[in-house]
Length: 158
Image (cartoon, rainbow, N blue to C red):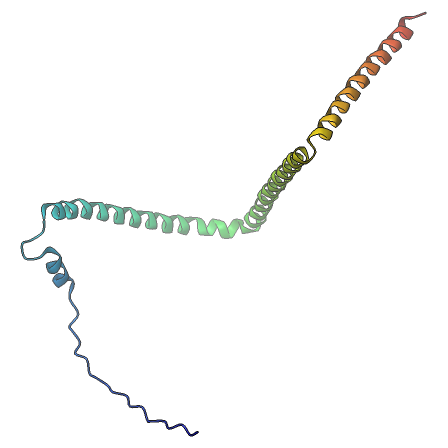
C-alpha cells in the first residue's frame, strides 16, 4: 500500500508588535485615573527612605570591606608561610574533633538502641543477668572486705 504524502505548507502571519509599555505607563495603569490611594502614598513615603538607608549601609559595608582587604592583603602575603599551615592545622584539628564527636554520638546511639532492643526481646533473661551481676558484685565486695580484715589482723596479730 503506497502512502501518499501531501506537501506541508508553512504559513507565516506577520504579527503587529505592541510597543513596550514604559514604566511610567505601568505606574499610570497601577494608580488608575483617580490617583494613588493614601495607603499607597504612605507605603512609598515609608519604604523609599528605608530602601535608601539600606542601600547606603550596603555601600558603606562594601567600602569598608575593600579598605580592610587593601590594608590586610600585604600582611597576608608576608605572613602566608605561617598563616596557611596554621590555618590548615587548626582546620584539621577542628574537623578531627567534630568527627570524633560524631562517631562518639553515633556509637552511643547504637549502644542505647541495642540495649533497648535486647530489653524488648529478652526482658526476663536480662533482668536475671542483672540480678546475678549485682549478687556477684556484692559477693566480691564482701570477699574484698574479708580479705582486707584478714590482712589487718595478720599485720597487728603477733
